[in-house]
Amino acid sequence: MSFTDIELAYLSTQRLGRLATAQPDGTLQISPVVFRYNDRTGTIDIAGRAMARSRKFRNVAANGRVAFVVDDLASVDPWLPRCVEIRGEGEAIGEPTDSAWSADLTQTGVDGAIIRVHPKRIISFGIDETAGDIGEYKASRRTVA
Image 1 (spheres, helix red, strand yellow):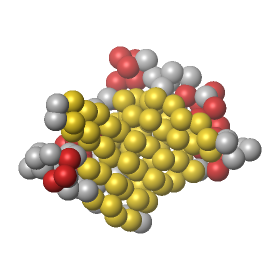
Image 2 (cartoon, rainbow, N blue to C red; image 1 turned 90 degrees about the vertical axis):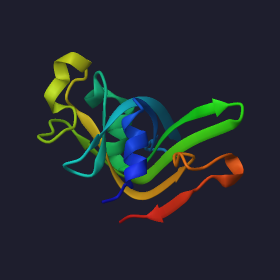
Image 3 (cartoon, rainbow, N blue to C red; image 1 turned 30 degrees about the horizontal axis):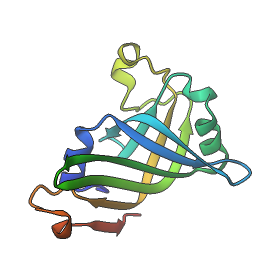
Image 4 (cartoon, rainbow, N blue to C red; image 1 turned 180 degrees about the vertical axis):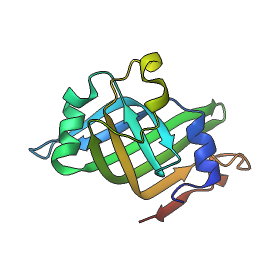
């Protein structure tokens, strides 16, 4: 498994993340996106309205380079940021048969096409609730594939 139980627990409490992709000329694009962890594939499935026509979908189809981050602030006093960053390979799938979104496409308004993020490197911090302040954060950095 790529993700730790703590990372999966954190991801399950979040709805939005930011996906970075590389355009054909090498410039970067970053987009806020909705996501779900796909326990069948061990991936992050990113969906959206008109996903198959989006620049991010075309970027991933062209070169597969992605980075994805989910973060928030558990507190501002004391300052307690939390984050899971995923670097990996993206897959643009027009009609997936095993999407984490398949069961409720009509309720969510997404069109079915997804970007699937296959983790290669995962960095997380601030999500282990046993940590006290930022100086005690337990950071995890690992290559998973």
